[in-house]
Image (cartoon, rainbow, N blue to C red; front, top):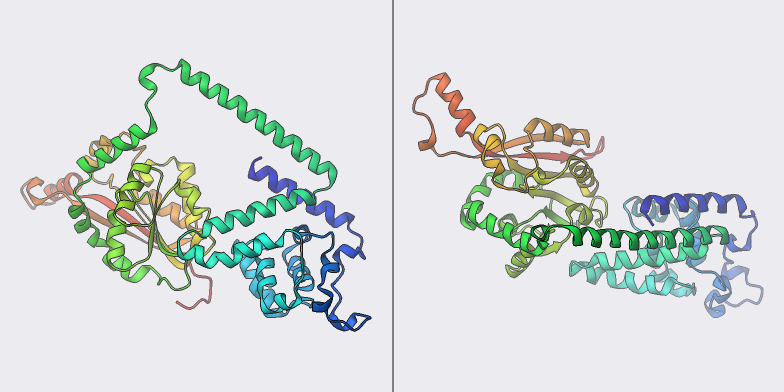
Length: 431
């Protein structure tokens, strides 16, 4: 089932639940406080099992965020939410933290442990939440997030009215049939394709590493070129404190940039869809994920990254993907965080008309004006263009008259440029 279809179904369920739920439904009534118990026993002595009997985490999946926070406090802590707690959890929800994770945190708090409410389905989320800090230290935080999201999806399905549940099951069954049909179509296409077309992706991946080795330059020469970004690193990349990663390098390739920033003690994670490149980076001791760049960014919480970088990646991307990638960069960056994308410079005529096409996987050159506007459109400011790697002096036409200098500028100027931009800070925020 697609995310869009599931989201639409969830909204329908929420609306239906809001119209059907009676005002005095015992399912949503506040939990009794210890002082209200007629026999004088405390809630700990009663064990609170009656509170959650027959009720599971589904109760947290309906209503708006404020209603969820109030319900979680009443159920798990036995009191109304205070202003600081409500503000804190609103902020977490806006940042992408799941409702189930917040419920687990409340249950694991001192108040929650004293109250000891037993709720069906909450224990696995509590265990995952307790492990989350250790998993994040090992760069495995995505495991706990994905597992909790899976628990939520299952709970939501249980909470659906019977008619919606049947419709969802029918839709899932139809999607499974479509997937099987597509597999048959793909297999038939493969069987009918000419033998020369059946090249494995692994073979292409290995070719691309060899191409990089032959044409991109040695590790040492690339490292020397990267020195042009020292000022940007020193002034535009926020510190690691409070962030999941200081730098996320998408399309990290052989890891030249990872080596450069790690040597300067920046925390960095690389992302590349080529497993041959990923294995090479891991053999050098770098933290690298073998994933699609956009898919990886979508696993990160909002405002959790200091900078996103990409070297010779945007010229490989179709526009709709690049558009979504820039938007996602803005989401994951902390306020004041930065992007840096380096790409071949088509202002150099030889690059734009010739050397750019050495790489079969290049789609089209990207101009400084085009990428600048795209960043501005997505809310970045303080845009700068850093041009680098000019042809050596001996390649230039001799002479210093205006015409010769103009010719040399077009033919022998910088072969690469990088665009940098900063995520705009909210109005009134301290710089």
